[in-house]
Length: 98
Image (cartoon, rainbow, N blue to C red; front, side):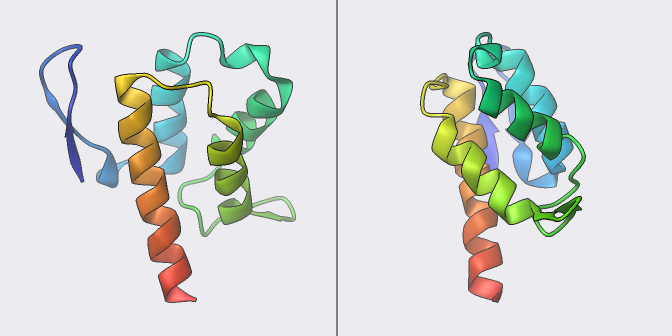
């Protein structure tokens, strides 16, 4: 899915990015993510994942990503909405497969 970003007027195709690449975008855009220690842990785990089907030690990637969505309510920038939309699309695709 392609998204138009306001910052630099370019189109971002988040569907081609890995989960760890999305984490880089999240950290660059969400200035205060360090305020929530659980979100920091989730982002650390997500930074190892290429897809939501991967594992982080014994945890399923899907579980980690869903937890991130649940705990990232305070991140609500324009980029956040687009990144979350892409992550939710992947979650739905994963759930449709099982």
